[in-house]
Structures are given as structure tokens and as C-alpha cells.
Length: 465
Image 1 (cartoon, rainbow, N blue to C red):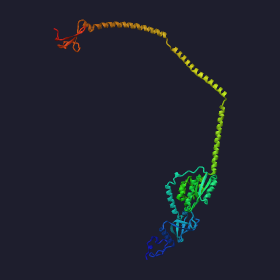
Image 2: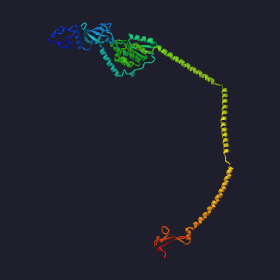
Image 3: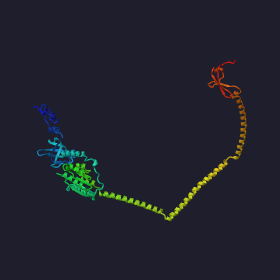
Image 4: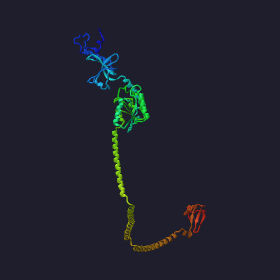
């Protein structure tokens, strides 16, 4: 009979099959080989998946591995979570806890027991709550509720602190103990509100609004101890986030442990890892303030001492400088005499210096002044010689001028005209020297020694007969 197992390589004859089997006979498997093949078949058919159930028979081995049974009302399955995965679980399950595990379905070959290998574990319902947490965080972040610009600084010196928590909460005792130890001078005001359960979120928001409306504290703490995500869910409600953001005074959120984050942490002005840490952040220790005040007092004393010493020294200086009126007048009289002497000296000294300089200049001028009498005699002699020479030259020039005048008089045309000659000019005033320049019937001007006449030409003869 032919079956599918004959064709499936998963069921091929393994190395553990009986060696005496004939080639056509069905394979004979060892138990180890069978369990190994079943384990591979389960792991291939069921990839990693989330499984919900209740914890039962939980055992934590010395090796760090966890062994337990996961069950519901109708069935159960063995489970193992190895140490490498268990250290990241975030909590240790207890009997009866409702959980969700991400596991690989397999077979424990040594016993042939069907089981699941757990890769991750969380409390039941955490997945849906975490998704709701992320949606609300994204929504409020888009509204600007978590913006850094909205965060307010804590007061430097806190005189009163308000606490929003349950009066029965262990977190309240931790906060009060921390404040009593660090800052017993701070006044505490409790605004009671339940921190989990039905309607707790509205009560928490109401307590925050009451503190904001009364404005009787400098700082507000919103806190509670650790727990599951369900226990802390009241601090993941939108109404609480808006109440924190709208509070009149700065708010510190101290909810859960170091790894717990809530919407209130993002909306608060400052997040503390634990309620005790919130108390430590809220108030500076009194010892620190006392030490600071002591240091300031020491600085003030030193500054005052230095100021007084400077004042005393200045007073001594003024006292030494302070004189009686008569002594001051005498001192000023001496100063006046000194100034008068200095002024007289200042006036006389320049005059004396100028007089001395003048005497030197006079001596130099006297040594370099020429003999004016000899120069005057020389000038008179020169004047006489110059006058004689000029008179002689003038006589000679007059004689030469007379001779030239006589020669000029002989060449004067007027003298020629007076001897009976005449000058003939044409109509253009040109002197006529040749008969060829004259035309018949032309009018000529004849210039005589005394006057002139115009003469008409009857005829022209180029030669004398």
C-alpha cells in the first residue's frame, strides 16, 4: 500500500533506521528520530504566535529557566522560558496569573512531551492597553500637551508641597518620610484620591484641579507605587493629563518604578522614577540650605568687615587732613606769599632775559655797523664826478643834435618847395614822377610851398621839345 509518507522527505529513512530493513519495506524509526521529526514538523507548522492562558505549576530553576503550565478551562500545555528570555520579562509570574506568551510550538524529545518554548511574556490584556496608551500619547502629543516649551521650572525655594495620592498608599509614606528627612520645614498638603479602580482617574483629576484652584502650595506631586499596567491605568487617562497640564503650579509625576511610564509622566513638568525620587526632586535638603546660608553669612560678614575697615581707613585719612580754621588760614597765607613770589619772579625773569638779549643784539649791531661819514664823502665825490661827466656828455650830444638838425633842414621838402619847386599828385594821392603816369584830361593836385592847386591836363608830352 502506497502512502504519502513514502514521498515526504521529512519521513525519509533516517540514520537511526534499522540497517537490516529491506529496500521495499516501510522505514523503521528510532524513538529519537521520531520525536525529532515530529518536533520539526510542529515548529514548521506553527510559527511564533501569541497564546493566552493561566499560569500553573510555576517553577524557577536554579539555572534561571522558568517551567510552568499554561491552561484554560478546557486544556493545558507545558511551557518553558529559558533564562536568556526570562531576564527580559519585566515581572515574575505567580500562580493564577493571566498572561499572554509569544511561543514556538515544539516537542521535548527526551520525554516525548509536547510543549511550547516561550520567547516573550506579558500580562493578559497588556497588548490592548499598550495600544490604547500609544494612541492617547500620540493624540495628546499632537495637541502640544507634551511640548518642552510648556514645561515650567521648579521653584528655587519650596515652602509648601501638595501631594495627590491615596492616604493608604505606601507611596505616601515614602514621600512623607523622604520630605521629613530632607526638608522638615516644608508644609505638606494632602489632596486624597484613589489611585486605581473604577472612577479613579476622575478623582485624581479632581484633586489636581482642587489644588490648582486653591493655589496654596508651591509645587504638586502626583504619585503612587509600582504595579501592573492595569494598576497604573488611572494615570493614563486623558482627563488626568489635561488636569496636570492646566495646573496653576508646577507638577512632578512619580508613578510606578523606574521602568514604568504613564501619560501623566509626559504631561507633568518633571518626571521622577519613583515617588521617593519625586520627593527628593521637590525640595532641596534643609542641610543644603543651611550650608548655603552659612556660606552666604560668612561672605556677608567678610564683606561687611572689609567695608568697615575701608571706612575706618578713610576716616583716619580725613582726620589727618582736617585742620583748625586759623591753621588753615595761616597755611593758605603761606601759599599766597609763595604764589606772589612765584608770580613776581615769573614777571621779572622774562623782562630780564629780553633786556639781556637786547643788549647782545645792540653790541652785535654796533660791531657790524658801517662808517657812514666815509661813505657819505665817497658818495659826494661820486656825485660830483657823475655831474661833470653828464654835463660834458650833454654838451657833446647838443652839438651833434645841432649838426643833425642842420642836415635835416637841408633835406626838408618844404625848403625845396620854398625854392620854387612843386609836388604833383594824382587823384589817388600818389606822387607823379613820369609823364607816362598822366592821362589827358586828368585832374592833378599840385602842392606848393604855401598851399595846393588842382590842375587839368590838356595833353601829355613824354619828351621835352
